[in-house]
Length: 121
Image (tube, rainbow, N blue to C red; front, side, top):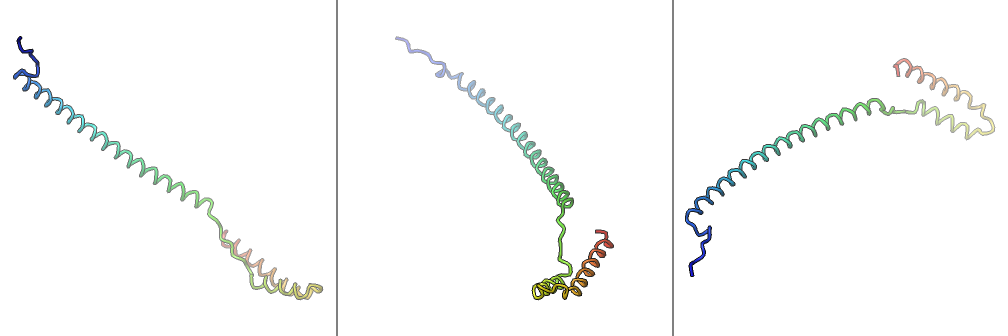
């Protein structure tokens, strides 16, 4: 009975397969280099986009903050206010006895208003 012939047993097939594998390896290496280059480009674009987006966000946040900046309010004539309230408590039945303090307080408040107007704010 003759021995069956297999392609793999042929001595000529080994160099042919080696060349085929080498060619496939070269193709894979070229594809790998191509995809690595594409990935590097995408990462660079992503980095640039992130930087621009971050800068735009920061700028917008600063603009909003400047536009809607909270004004700090400090009580004016606080010492006179405390004195007049104390006077009213002590003289609940005779509030006219606090009129001199009330007059001082009103002058102080008006001066503070005038000062704000002159400063332009």
